[in-house]
Image 1 (cartoon, rainbow, N blue to C red):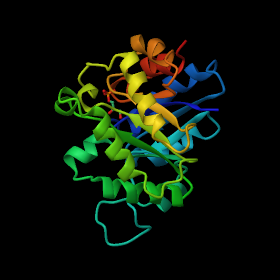
Image 2: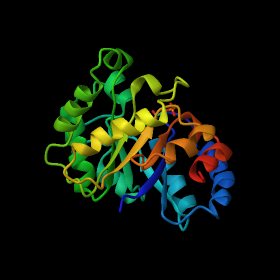
Image 3: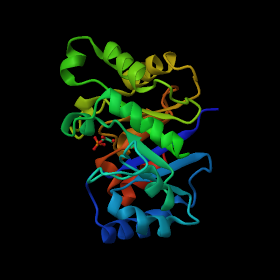
Image 4: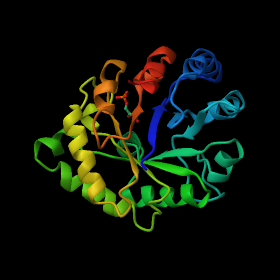
Amino acid sequence: MRKIVIAGNWKMYKTQREASEFLQKFLPELEQTPEEREVILCAPFTDLGVMSKSLHGSRVQLGAQNVHWEDEGAYTGEISGFMLLEIGVRYVIVGHSERRQYFGETDETVNLRLKAVQRHGLTPILCVGESKQQRDAGETERIISTQLQKDLVDIDQQNLIIAYEPIWAIGTGDTCEAMEANRVIGVIRSQLQNRDVSIQYGGSVKPNLIDELMAQPEIDGVLVGGASLDPAGFARIVNYK
Ligand code: 13P
């Protein structure tokens, strides 16, 4: 059975105080949320400690947005899996297109990070997706296949979430059509050894689009940027119909 996974990616938004204010409004909205939906907030590193305390006993799981592949060492500015584990993080986003684009992330480093996440017993959310230029050139499937092939070398597909995030849809308001997202996610699934991996869609997911997206048979959840910053809006997404 594929798990439904609804995750917020806060990117570089929210101080600890803002995170606490968010949770005060957001958590009461989850009382009616069906049990089987996994709800995750992937927050900046500085928020994780305080959020871990507030989320204790709640149904929301904590996620980080990156991790280094070594357990410790002289890597200024990096965070290890041990550090995340100690504060109660359960999920880690790996290979987000913003990290690939702005911070030199490659399929090789994505693979190393995925391995580190799994070695620590955490669950990675691997992001893949094509740019506008690649889509227009008809290269969507090829780009995604290459990413999957390289990123997933020696990765345990029993402990993995994938997010299909077309780069042209991220932060642009230009959401991928639900049927097209469904199609590409089907292509991704066809390339996996474990067909039961939960595969999310991400890219300008908004409360008014969530019901249609989640009605698609291949879409197992969403990875939400901007719309996860607002407690009422993200609650509506989590409580899709
Ligand atoms: P937006 O929802 O803001 O487009 O961001 C999507 C995303 O990058 C989630 O990881």
